[in-house]
Amino acid sequence: MNQIDPALNTPRRDARERALTFLYEAESRGCPVAEVINALPLPPEQFTVDIVTGVEENLATIDELLNDYAHGWTVDRMAALDRHILRIGVYELAHRPDVPRNVVLNEAVELASQYSTEKSSKFVNGILSAAAEELRDQKTVPETKSSV
Image (cartoon, rainbow, N blue to C red):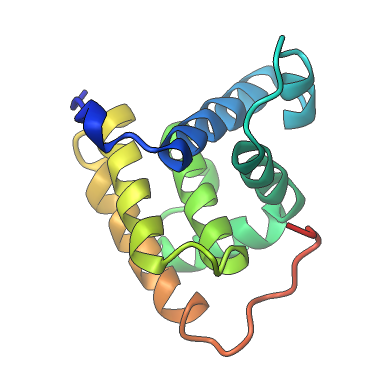
């Protein structure tokens, strides 16, 4: 695993990292992410909650988009960490216009570099770059179930 320079850590980067762990834990335990969050002694920061809630509420649409962009792959075949990193990235691209496109891509690639396999950062970058072309170049963002 690569090490991230501590000076580069930001509250939102930390929030994404926590969101990744919550999504991974929820999938591993086969429970809703709310159950993971509710079991914490202290509530996580709001940006983390927004991400995991948004991913969970829009999961079918996010996975459909990922299946479209991951040529030769399905979401089910992806490594669990890659899958959750991509879900976070697609959620932010589609539903968080306040987060710049390049930030979404850089943060996802950084998470993949730090936590997943050697090839994951290129895989994540390729899929999210393709998704960003469509999602961020559209005049309207796909409808969301989330009020985030």
